[in-house]
Image: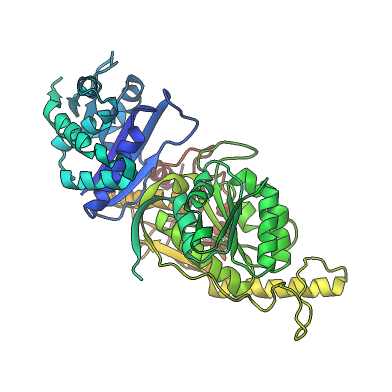
Amino acid sequence: MTEEIIIAGFGGQGVLSMGKIMAYSGVMQDMEVSWMPSYGPEMRGGTANVTVILSSERISSPIIRQFDTAIILNQQSLDKFENSLKPGGMLIYDGNGISRHPERRDINVYRVDATEEAGRMKSPRTFNMIVLGAYLKIKPLIKIENVIEGLKKSLPERYHNLIPLNEKALNRGMEIITRISL
Amino acid sequence: MERELRLMKGNEAVAEAAIRAGADGYFGYPITPQSEILEYLMEANPYQTTGMVVLQAESEVAAINMVYGGAACGKKVLTTSSSPGISLMQEGISYIAGAELPCLVVNVVRGGPGLGTIQPAQSDYFQAVKGGGHGDYHLIVLAPSSVQEMADFVGLGFDLAFKYRNPVMILSDGAIGQMMEKVWLSPYRERSKTVPDWATTGKLPSRQRNIITSLELNPERQEEFNRKLINKYNEIKEKEVRYEEFQCEDAEYLFVAYGTSARVCQKSVQIARNEGLKAGLLRPVTLFPFPSERIGTLSGRAKIILSVEMSSGQMLEDVLLSVNGEVPVYHFGRMGGIVTTPEEVVDFLKLKIMGG
């Protein structure tokens, strides 16, 4: 099993930390993992993306151009990465601020309105956990208990009181993801 | 003690491994894409635990000269930087090689020349392998291709540096520095309580004065010293060549690649094999000494050899020398901070097979 994922959005949306939690969770489940950020002069409001690979085997190239899954959190990223999905791949996007929706018919498209939901939950920072929950609903590669363990590893101790809230956000994401048929 | 599993960036792995290797001192100056090394060490504050000194110097020139001083005292010291900073250090590195001192220098390479870009590249191969400073000298050059090796090569680098009294360079790149992977950390090694007998720690009545210098104005004695260095480099070439092979047994198309490019080429081998092309990868782990002999042997079966590197073709020259004109050798690789993709490598190979 190898799952090659790109997560892309604005800086400040928690793109890199979501990837980090995925990677930590993968380690908790005894998988091979790699986390490769686009590093550079990006800043809040700029674009940020990260490639995460989860695999049962030794990972060859951490840098890839074709993905099994694209988690897309803004319009620029949708424009950039829609064509980087393998045929049959999965695209999850947040509808917030999207004016041109996904168009490819050879991929599976899902929508999760996580920005809206995070606002409704009055905790905008759980946004990325809603998205992660949505992803795990469709591809349950990592058990929730391992995600919680991953959260514990990647969050500083002083934020551990927020773990129940994050768990709630994960579950909420699982509930609100919808499949879009084109 | 048990080895410990962590998920870390390559840069963080270097920093943690330095503490665990029993380093006495780190001297550095921040530069992207390797600033996490200094940041990690500052936060870890190992002076409180192992007594290791961590110091942010006022410049790279100062940092390498602090390394020179620490090494002359017989201490286990290192510095890290990225391409422009490593260029600034070249004078000091040449002096350290000339004074036959052990130390570790890590270069997390970014694109050049000049300030270039902060993205990954492999364009400092010549500088690392052929001697970036002046004079006849070589560094022992280790090329990690995973976060695990970023950690492992710190301990190995120190061992080789002290064994041969020679500076060792870890030649990495921005991709390996910035990416996170699983890493098994070695148990802590205690800092050495003794120093080698050549160290300048104050003259004792029982022995002659120890002098550390790279200066010798008598030409005969300087030539004699140059010959001594050659003998040392020859011994290193004989004993310390390291490489790894992937599916080379029946390879007709051989990729030679190190570091990040070697990871990319592992996938290229899979893609090519799925398309019926017998591809293989030889990954030099040491760039000096270079696995010339092994590449020469493998070239006997090969129809085409590609030197895949994120540069305009630098290691290419060492591959050409290894193959000695027996087989066509080409270079492929992106530059300017762009990481080559596995598919691009295979496409280029196919082009060459077609005679393009």
